[in-house]
Length: 112
Length: 112
Image (cartoon, rainbow over all chains, first blue to last red; front, side, top):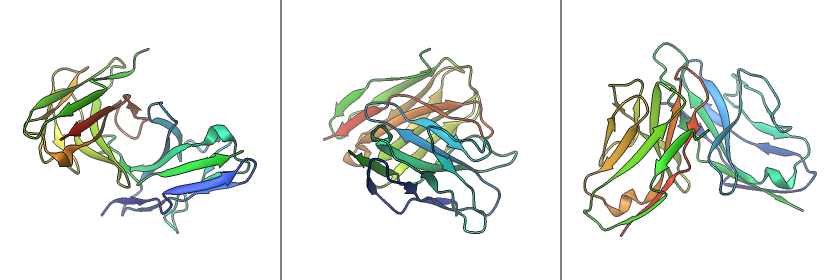
């Protein structure tokens, strides 16, 4: 079964501390993986996707196929990073319709 | 740019009442989706439409119907609302095929 697991409901860190939001997935094929973010009173938006291999707002995520993980990392957290973060998967291939399978979400709280 | 627009933003229904959530996008996207967001569950796909004229069930379709009225509009109908349908509903659109999904601002629905 296709599944995305985010084991932490809440991650609380101090400003300037490193951040790692965990994401593990279960999928038999080659998935496309994403991180979406929802800031307070804003709509859900794409943060980054693994095929782009880019850094957005200082965040990076590496796909580890051996461990089936796609953890989101940032070396120095900022208060404006406080938000709900969702890891998501979409199946790769011709049958893909862009539908997403989301994890449960992790609330990141960055304290001053 | 309006992007994805949902109406209404808030709604309270009595058990057994019906209502339709409206969604429109102005990005000429082929694919549209309805998700529900519940605490601890993340976002779960209710229905999607890969292209104009087609609709398919997602993970949690029971109690809902959809209509892809045209390329721009994709509505979600609750025929007989139940308290278990209390949730935040998100409409989204994309070009399909592993691309970014754009989300509406959400509809907070309470069924009493």
